[in-house]
Length: 163
Length: 163
Image 1 (spheres, rainbow over the protein chains, first blue to last red):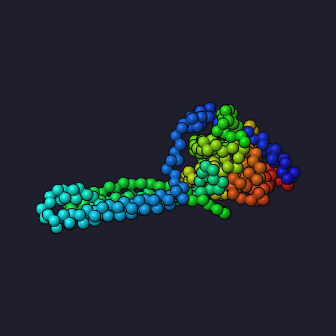
Image 2 (image 1 turned 90 degrees about the vertical axis):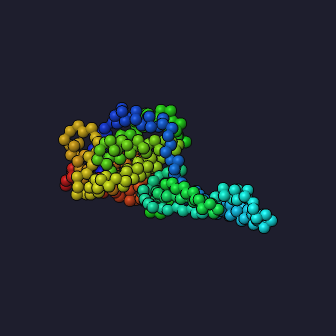
Image 3 (image 1 turned 90 degrees about the horizontal axis):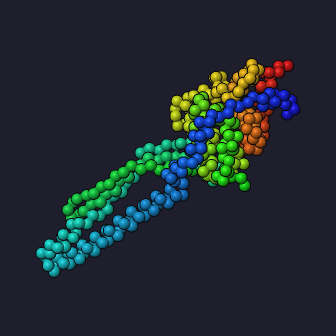
């Protein structure tokens, strides 16, 4: 290394330009700003759990409502057997909406490269998913349906191991 | 453990680190403004996540990650980066306070170094990172970091001290 000591000294003599006062002020303001900006990051495990939880919740809701609807239908048929003209039971069943479908379409996936996140020792690959979710309910008695659609965006961080 | 989040005199700490960080960031972007944005984002992220200021490898890795992320996001920047890292192309001019012709020539020679060698040189000479820190920041072995450093010095020596 001694062979290079002279050129090292020459390089060290090159003085770096100092940052402007405006830049220091700007960084100070950015540090003081409490806005975090990472709320939307979903780590892989959380992301998977969310999807599983969403699916389980939707299925459970569907089963519960379907069961209630079936019981109600049985009661109604009993009542109809006892009393063919029972307008009040029709009025209650007419207001019941049953989940008819839930879809989530991923229409864009973007690889945003490697990032270092808080606490992680190594880099993580960031994938951004843009999706469109649709929930649908249907009233069998009246044929009316209700549909809610909304766009969503999720970010997944995948740890990178090895080189 | 010294922590940036509880460091009262952050401005002096940042002032101390900023010139080297800006020079490091300038390797990927041409404009000083872009370099400042990168350094700001990296430093603020580092600060908010309460990383130890002594973990310089992580700080430089964060700057590098943000810089690469920035140029990946923008195709125009990606083209510029491709030009910047090309050995044959004119590369980014480091920011130095040049005092004479010899220093100007040395800075120009520095620009002509291969990107991977210049990167190590910048971290070692003007940021005073150890080879272990450089290796950690770049995800390479210490031997590779040391080799790149020696190749860079040898190339510069060849230009300035022809035998």
